[in-house]
Amino acid sequence: MASLTCVNAMVASKARFVGGARVSAKSSITRVGGLKAKASVSMRVTGGRQGLSVRAAGLDFAELETAASQDEDDDADWVAPVRATRKDGKSAKEARMSKRFLKALKSVPGRLNPVSPEEGVKLMMDNATAKFVESAEAHVRLNIDPKYNDQQLRATVALPKGTGKTVRVAVLCQGDNIAAAKAAGADFAGADDLVEDIAGGMLDFDLLIASPDMMPKAAKLGRALGPKGLMPNPKAGTVTPDVVTAVNEFKGGKVEFRADKQGIVHVPFGKLNFTAADLQENLVAIVAAINANRPPGAKGIYWKSLYIASTMGPSVMIDHTAVEAQVGK
Image (tube, rainbow, N blue to C red; front, side, top):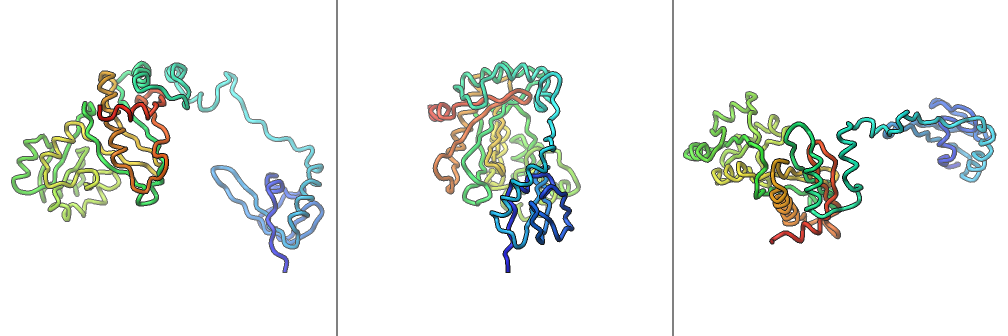
């Protein structure tokens, strides 16, 4: 019995045409370059693009390739569609950018041209021209694949100069810890009563800290807290018996970071009303924390790239080796 042979890309690339004739998915007989054979046709859409796959019985690869070259004469009158162009010469991506952003984009180096941390922070601050105080963000691409357990990255870092944001903290604890947490600056603190409030829809906080003895009761809040990333986790430092220290740390500028599915870490490291020296100090702390929490499964080169950007400004590539050299100084 003849095996099924897949038509090569030269045939399949002709939009829904094989041998100069349109092929439907229900066809059982088709002609390829004058060769008649049983065929099965399947259409697949990937990323908005359609692909045609034809499997013909009784035709080998050489015959199909020859047939494809013969069919080119039949399609000589076919003209490829011309992509529309804008009158102003801008690409579709540039057309969506504001004049302010385009002006700022011209003042920064190319995306693959790293600069020193000092120059990068200065460029970021000079291009923060929005009408509000923008945040400074670090975006780190690492050579890890988080789908493997030993290559996942999730940790915390205490920013020496803080985040510039007011963090609302809630604490699940019992006994004397409730009064101690409130004295430390917690916005909400309680035991069963706070669990009931959260289950009822009260989510007026940015961070939830829990003592280990309260985690069984907090488990039923997973459906409400999980999607918002508020569920306490030991790796994030939000499950601890010393709730007072945890409140002080998070109120003082401790932030959590993790790698997304692409192995990129996104961390805010201050506001643009900070001094350049303060932003650089926070950036060095982030780099040190990422290196200190390197996953055991990360092999070879760990760092791929480091970019910083303001909330509404263009990104600037930073020489991460220069930042790493400042760790510990």
